[in-house]
Length: 228
Image (cartoon, rainbow, N blue to C red):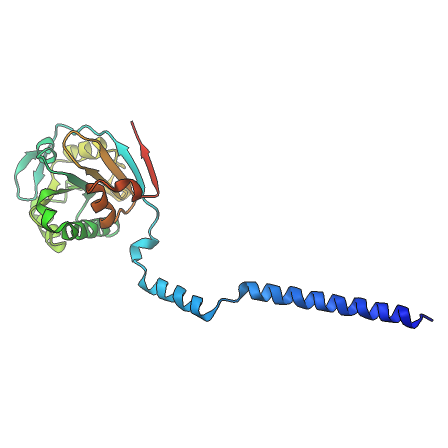
């Protein structure tokens, strides 16, 4: 038969084990409890978040793209040389779209619409250029109707042309994917004729493009690099 001292020692050991187990459970529970105020703040942040914040990260790179000697048809029906359109002395923001697109193009055009609004008094000093990747379907009339949907001003012009010319433009800016269904969101910015192009792969926001035009673009994207 065990003595009283042995029983007391056993009792103390059991009590210590129970206390240790209780502390472990309490600590684990404390780690997963979210204070009501923090939960409210998180919910409020989710409610006020910009939908574009959920889009994949944008990659920024600096590239030297020579403008090809091709001719396109502007949305006013005029046959023009692309090099003349891009080298008229203004900064250029360029993208590729097509009028029947239901995925990438509406968002890309919405961003251009926002940009021209945010430019304010500067809007006529920046040339927004949208080139169709569906030259067979996108006539100047269709491009005009498309432009009206996004309240395009006189400094935002849309271009079409022959299939060969459209393909050449896409190849020149390394956006050609074989057909219109494969095209990806790319926006290009050049602040002066003869200068390098800043390329955004992904959905660049109007705020990012505006910063680029104002010379503060190095901090607008997840990755910044220079291509040859």
